[in-house]
Image 1: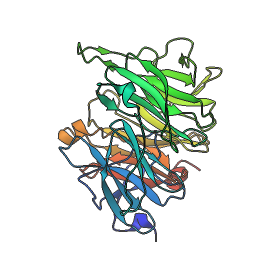
Image 2: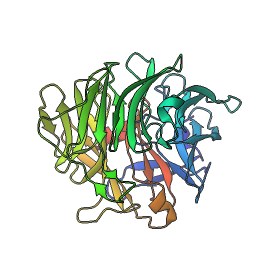
Image 3: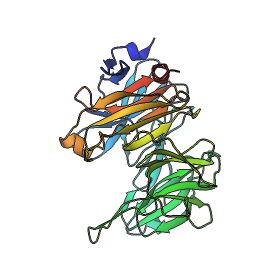
Amino acid sequence: MDILKSDLFTPWTDPQSSLTTYILTKKAAPVHEVFYYVNNSMTNDGRYLWFYCAYPPSDRRTLGLLDMQTGEINVYPDVQIMGAPHVDPETGDIFWGMGSSVWRRGKRPQDTPELVGSIPADLIGSRRVERVATHLTRSADGKEFFLDAFIGLQAVFGSLNIETGDYQHWHSFNRNHNHAQFSPTDPDLVLFAQENHPDPITGLTFRITDRMWLMRRGEAPRPVFSEPTVVTHEWWDEDGDHVWCIHSSGTWRVNIHTQEVENLEWPVGAWHSHHHPNGKYVVGDARAKGVPFYRGCPSWVEFLNRETGQCVRFINNPERIDYVGQNYHIDPHPRFVGAGQYVVFTTTVLGDVDLGIIPTADLIAATGG
């Protein structure tokens, strides 16, 4: 059975590109969203697809799971997430951060949550834990998760052993740093971001001056570039020698050893991009030129075929300026999933906040592939 052609999904054809997106309209919750683009949400075999569920005006999201083989959808209210979770790409099990701990559960409704481990209480003291991880990433050897926690007034970085629950402290910062991601090839290396810092005492915001940083276990952090460089929304390339990021001129691919920049010059005005595992294709979202940014503003999603140089825009999301649009971070966040079989993203084309999915093969065919 082609699950995308089932009554779980509503097909929506873009009038300009004639490409059809399949929107999950069998509602498990009032709001469906894809994960933040750094984290994969589907098993490599394309069977299990996890997604965010929200119940406005709740300030927490939980998770839904779609079995792409049987059509079964389940919601797991025991998974109250802080940051983006990690999906085991082979088993479909989910790992997530909550409070000062990391938890896991299986994909079956009868499975129960299990504690993986916690940040030590003596490191936290009487401070409040605002986040345990921006998005969980697993080390190249599979043994640890990286935690870029924010505790009290500090960003506290460390790693958590998945088997033993042991925590190793790496470094603490006195301003906001986040988006930490284990290298896909080196279990002792992380990429992370200097983030805008909202000062909780003065109410002032201190802006990014030098965005991308690296840190090796046991060593001091160092910037990716020798000169302060303002970019945003970074993620690793599978080769572990390059990182991708967003610059005002387009999507960059940066060699972490030489600082050499490959500028795709696409898409102009990008928010987020993500590359296919084979590196030949990129998907990105942005807002229309001249439109100021605000939560819920109109957006679009494009696909770039690097082999042919052709790109196609296949979604134009109308704005949502209501409570949902302003409070649930409904940017499209497009990403390749299922080992590159699909692109998933958040969309508002039907008036709700929904999960959209499109086969990558359709996008390749539309761009001369």
